[in-house]
Image 1 (cartoon, helix red, strand yellow):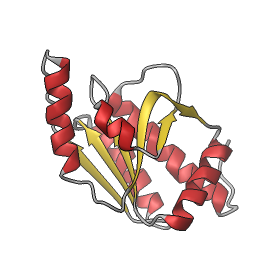
Image 2: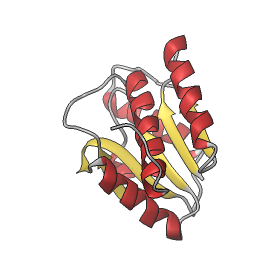
Image 3: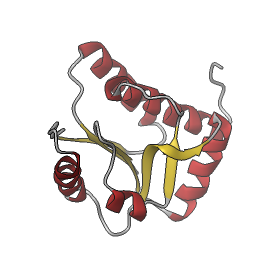
Image 4: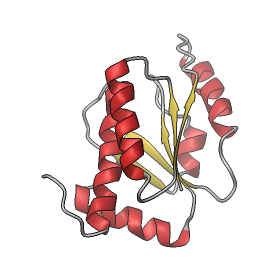
Length: 151
């Protein structure tokens, strides 16, 4: 099972539609759950991160394999990401990806992660990134199952 816990919600219908499309495609390969927690949007960085962390922790379990998405994380090609995901799933049935809010994720959550993943040194809008990320998960499953997919 893959769980994505994201700070903030998707309001744009066209992005919601794209997310639903990838969720539908991924059903063939894995159970997928997307959980949105409220973006506190406060001016105080530390207070915001603490409140968002508390909300995220309500959805975490002891056996989860935690992966944070952060600019400082490790970058992979699509093939490398597919291979890494495949290796992780061999020993871990619950993989949880964390997508932070405007201030990212708390240091505490980052320390608990077993993998710090970056898609780029660039900053992307959170709403658009979620679609982009789901596409890469779908691509990883296609690669791992030796199925053709556009390049």
